Image 1: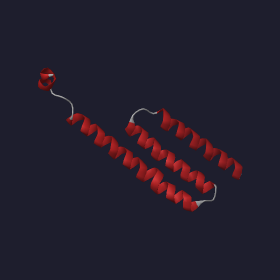
Image 2: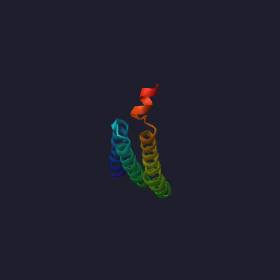
Image 3: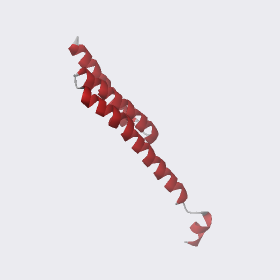
Image 4: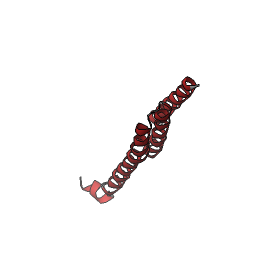
Length: 92
């Protein structure tokens, strides 16, 4: 029974990791990364490593996706303010 749970958890981790790689939108990637962190926490729990699982929940499914979302937001905001206006384009 334990081997079956480990195999299922590994399969879920592989599926969510593949999905995180294939998704193109950074906001969706952050959400998928959060889901990957949760599935890794489940895997660590199945492998009887609850301390690692709790760390994974805190860092992998909460902190890292939050930092990615904040970075994407800042880059998108900066990209809007640095676009040249029509008058600037004509002067060049």
